[in-house]
Length: 290
Image 1: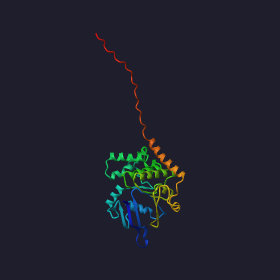
Image 2 (image 1 turned 90 degrees about the vertical axis):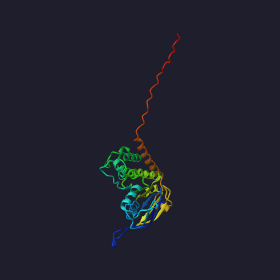
Image 3 (image 1 turned 180 degrees about the horizontal axis):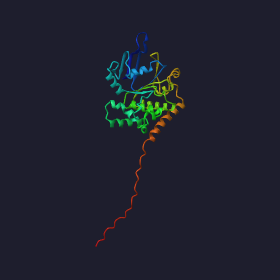
Image 4 (image 1 turned 135 degrees about the horizontal axis):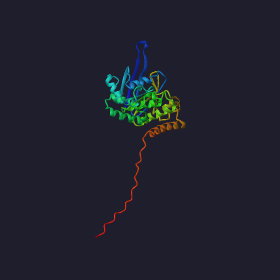
């Protein structure tokens, strides 16, 4: 059963001669558990497509079913509730609140869900441990590196256990090592069953995806199913994901190992119980009979 289904979806901005077609009659079906990378030049409609799927924007016309429910004409409050419960967002600029600690930023979506403060803290701590940032929970965003900020954003996106993670250029501001750590996290999230939709300009990152869409002028021009790390044909390899070299694979593994080592180093060491030496006791002599 499909999780996302778009039929004849279009999005127009402006009126009359000033009308801009951002999406044009898009047909798209995404199954649960897919990792979909979306590519295309600037202005091709990638972000608009994510905004429609993420219920941040309404289509001008067309049908949108999310988990078999029609959602294109929901009222604002109903849209906000579906968006809160079903979708987690990771943006290029993390949109963390600068005056709140990392822990409070991650726990914030639970405030709108009405969870008690103690419960919010426990869940947020669990999410931060999952992304390897337990020791940064009382830091502020300006005290973190770019890669750490994106990992906080991923933890916040996961806090409500959403079915869909939408990532719009999540590694756009990161160096190569931090990018790989973020991508390994997204791949792990996908392996646990979350559907991941990611916009990227970097064709190398599409090797993490199981499916690649290429957009141009508001339409999906190519839709390629592929094995993770390898594109389907030579032509598609040039257009989408370069086949991963041994060096690429090693760098991905090293990024994942670095994250795991970081998590392990932050776990408190188990105290070994000291055993007291047993004292040898002499057997008691039986009283002699009188």
